[in-house]
Picture (cartoon, rainbow, N blue to C red):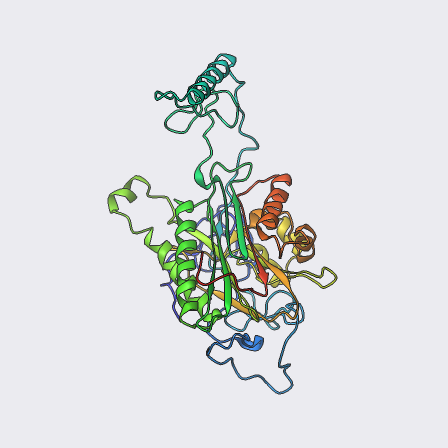
Length: 456
């Protein structure tokens, strides 16, 4: 098992992050009751498939663990088969029995307060008129074929009047203009993804990778990786981009060599973690100027789809959902959050509705980064018996469609046929709901279908 070294740091209060002394029952700073926070469940990654079996691609993958007598040879829906993570721990819908509760080793708050709005100044009509005149001059010059063409100045997307300076800010209202990552869309064969900055964040700290490829025997496979940068850390946008790219590259390489998809997913998360760790390796002089900044960090969730197998892997609170084409069949959430809210629910201290309504709900207990307590990749595999679509997303989307049933209601009926259109619809749903966070979603139709050789 590949693990990151556990950091020798004192325990901190999960409410205010103040250091705690051994044996404390209450936080000395905020008075938080420390006995109410359970420890994260143990998870020891392995590379076996558990009870979910292997795909029908014909690739010579490592055999699954022996099944006990009476175990069905071919499970049906993800809802019929709760699935297991990489350590054999049941996923949502099949809670473990006999679990114990102990103080958590630490949590991380990744949602600092955002302003309710970014006020804009009124447009300056003189600048608007000047910009219009320049634009007309440019168009006339192009129409006449003049060699001395006039470059049309960029106009602010916020006030629609001011010129944009060389630094990317409006000279009228001061609004920062959209960056390349503010809105991203990509298709790769049958899989597609869309990412948007949202309406309240000043930049997009999410990233994704979507690819389609072929296994050694020619069987098609699609994959998607979605990462959410931890806002309280330094350079979260770089962390998510590095993790998504490295994980995607690792998955393509492993699948092309015939590695079992669940093993490939585990190895890809480890590789992504190492890439994020490397971002913290900066000169000591740089740390002197920002001694209190956390190391770059992000969450990760990914999925691999073949004609007979569906694999997911994750660390953090980004999620994957299963939505069948036939909506009379139940949808299912395929991942379990590494978060304070999930721990409260697992310990029986709160209902799911109560936990996720709490302001501490998004305090994550697992992430990729040099200051993470321990790397514990989760993986699970399923064998659906009917077509559907896998929704891989950050909490910027599932905050507005939290349950599997709610997600099923907002996923377009033709998502398996038009994944890019469906991803746009889902991002729009989050923006219409308030867009308080970055929004990223990838859609993978199941089963995978051939889209030509190689990856796009």
